[in-house]
Amino acid sequence: MDDNGRETGVVLTEEQKRRRRMRSIAIALALGALVLLFYVVTIVKLGPGVLSR
Amino acid sequence: MSLVSAGTDFRAPLDAGGLVEPSLATVGDYVALMKPRVMSLVVFTALVGLMVTPGHLHPVLGFAALLCIAIGAGAAGALNMWYDADVDAVMSRTSQRPIPAGRVLPREALAFGLTLAIGSIAVLGLVANWLAASLLAFTIFFYVAIYTMWLKRATSQNIVIGGAAGAFPPMIGWAAATGTLGLEPALLFLIIFFWTPPHFWALSLWRAPEYARAGIPMLPVVAGQAETRRQILLYSIVLAPVGASPWLLGYSGALYGATAIVAGAAMIALSLQIAALGDNDEGIRAAKRLFGVSILYLFVLFAVLLIDDWLGAPGRVLL
Image 1: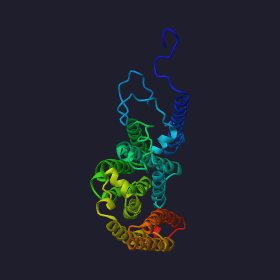
Image 2 (image 1 turned 60 degrees about the vertical axis):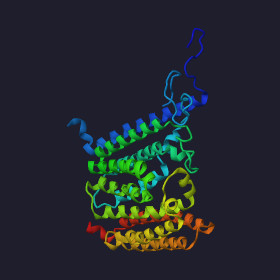
Image 3 (image 1 turned 135 degrees about the horizontal axis):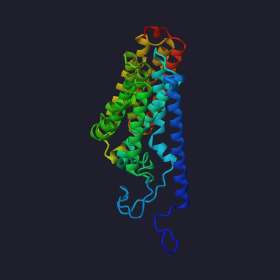
Image 4 (image 1 turned 120 degrees about the vertical axis):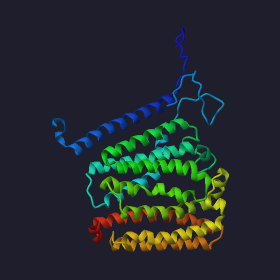
């Protein structure tokens, strides 16, 4: 931002912002799904008593 | 992504004249990079390979293994699109793919593909076993390095040898469930291997001008339409008994055997029709018919193999 408060870097259009947001949501959902998958797979492979071993 | 500052000096490879614009890629573009239609066939054949095994895999682990195989296939698709962007740009069928259309940068596709490949292989190794993970790694390597980078642009036998990449998924599914390999998964491999040439060459009969323009030595471009029709027939004749081999060797029941014989005969009949017709509209229509029927052939064979297995075919006890 310059002295007059104007944006000086890359300024995204509304469409670019919308698509970036959708990509971010997709990445978040994928990461969440991976966390869930790893948790369930761990329980299945090692059993519910995994934490008390 | 492509959210670059104005001072960044890298440039879009397909538009060497200007700075890279902030990305307009949608989530759908990244899904398209993974070739979802190819992925669906991979998932289905891998599922069958996983389900018809004599062993038992926990459903959660089976689902995770299938997910890894699907993502691995998606990685191979993304890496294929990364390398083939120049060829895709000059073919109408592929010119609107994310990279040639300019929505995704080649290096974004490369990073996406490599990330998915490494992740899917590692997770499959941890979830199932390292034999399955090694097969998945080899399949991705084979599709990207052997087929895409080498064979596709070098020989008219590109899809014959390269077809092996598409034939591995049921073996990976089998290996994920059992930790071993054997004759039955090898038969599933051979069915897809011999199915690939008539399937793709039927497509290439009416796409030949585009392949020629892109410099891809597909069989009709190099050897002509007549030779391609002859080769389609030869491979269909080989495919029919190979398709029936799980029944012939006692690994599946009569339902599968009857289905494979009828389906194999249909493939041969359509191939004969194509061989008899010349390079005209009727011949092109027949080629399109064979292309569609070939997809149905593979789907029906593997679906019936699965059903036959559920029905408790006598061959199962032999495994």
